Image (cartoon, rainbow, N blue to C red; front, side):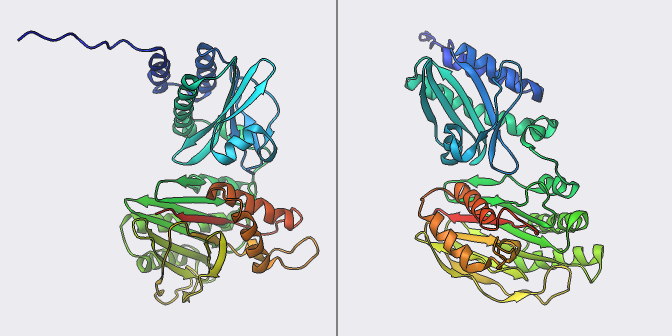
Length: 397
């Protein structure tokens, strides 16, 4: 049998360019990611390439240093083209005297790593496709290399960070996850001095698991207690136990480690992403808020048990059927118990009013969670005496 003509397997320019990045990625030291991006952009005819990372306070996009990358001042997320790209997770093109400045979101699983920017003489669909694929590769590189170096941490840190906050940030999952059926976004405040607040989540098959905790006290002792609580939660969750069993495991771990006079308020949830069926147990934590059709519908008040560590009774399961597009807001008491600039306690009514206002913007959970946290902080006069953490979940159906 005579063999047919061999298909043309030569690399196109775009395939060769992306292949060059992939070929070098495996053993690429973290500090050479920037130079690799600069080299790739130069081959595309690009100028002034930048990789901009979100700072821990979620206020600025900070240029990553590296040979060939353009430097410059950090750009404010709320008032820049790069910030618009970041918030909407969409490319932004800005005409300039010498060409077009293109900003692309650096997305990894829906989490926003930052923004990649470059100036080209002109931009066509081939350029857009190439840059979109390249930005996805760069985002993956930044995430996979993050654990090998302090470079990215130092770039993102804009002020001194407490030891307690260092511990808490090392515990956290990505601040956001956006999938076809579900989206999650969380914010920790004060970013550089958070201690006892934390959250965790995992998408295991069709089930989203979530937890939010608030360890008593402040500083390093609270961070240590939060570490034990989150570690116990993950351990029990990974054994595929139910919510009641997870509570019992966390309660036992905190009590044995810290004694009967220490506790952690907690809320653990399971969401079936196929059906929207939500279950949760509440251990002395503020009740979540349900947002439906861009309005706060009600507080999800239900049976509670004692905080973790105090040996409470077996918790009762709370259940709710979500509708497509519903959002559930979980928060710690620091979000509503802080006093406003005028001296009055902030309270849930103001929280509801602000949530309703932000929901009408139609933005995704990541942008809404960030805007809500910053709006609340401004309403308190920029003052935070306690950790104030929120976690926003959307069932997309």
